[in-house]
Amino acid sequence: MVSYSEDKEAYLKRLRRIEGQIRGLQRMIEQDKYCIDVLTQVSAATKALQSFSLGLLEEHLSTCVVEAATTGGKEAESKVREASDAIARLVRS
Image (cartoon, rainbow, N blue to C red):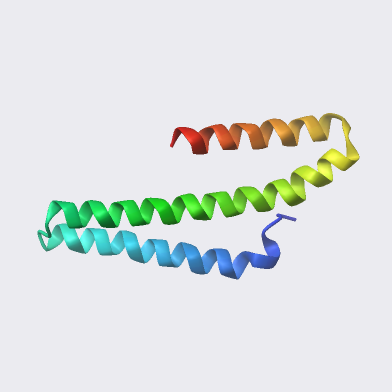
């Protein structure tokens, strides 16, 4: 079972909102909107994705990683490494 199961609908709602932002960007390009206006919307969509990612990461850390840490052993090491790698990817993006 994934850690976000209880909040799945909320996550899907956020992703649909982000999808709408991306479609809005496509329309802006189709309509030859001013570059700075497009860039402003790109920034908003980027922040929305970052916020989504951080929320999902927080949920993962507070459930999957904590549960594995409580159990200990190789599973705990694996979950911590997994989380660390995910954080590194987010920081680089």
